[in-house]
Amino acid sequence: CKEGKCVSTDNIDYHIGDIITFGHYEQDSDTSNGKEPIEWRVLDIDFNGHLLIVSDKVLFPQLYNFTPISVTWEKSTIRSWLNGYDSSYNTLGTSFTSSNFIDTAFTPEEKARIIASNVPAHANPHYSSTPVGNATTDKIFLLSVVEAESYFTTSEARKAYGTLYAIKYGLYAENY
Image (cartoon, rainbow, N blue to C red; front, side, top):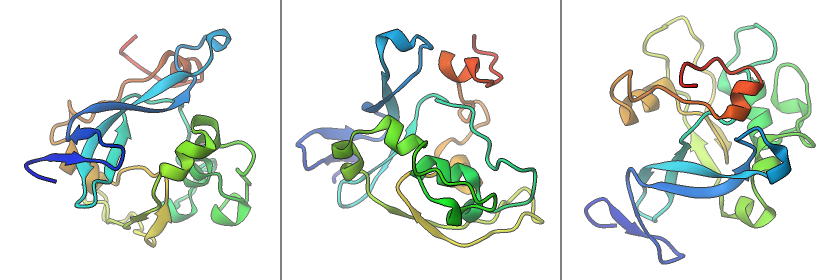
């Protein structure tokens, strides 16, 4: 990597801020034409050329946790749904091994390219009473408040826009 530019193992130059496509997920709410390519924004590139990417749109309005109890990332149902974890990974005891994001959005070859990352347990700087929890290792994860505010420095930059499919399934959006 040099001056914010890296060359990956597939010999493609990536830059922070680039939009790349990787995986497919229903987005236009027309299932007859198949899933659409997912667009991701490159947030960071490590010294090995690994990309930290975030979906450029809200793909599905998944709850952080299916029950309204205080829960950390480690035991949230969204973590299990994103990664396809079994019932031992969340407080609700629900298995997501057969219905989840990672298996729906990525082929086995694409999943093999996703690196399991250490997900630190950052304290929420705005709510000191929120429990921190433990660090985890996941392939798919949400940015912490600290990370979101670091990569997206204004509230306007942190606004997320949803796909038509996400809106159809309950995402409240002002963009459509």
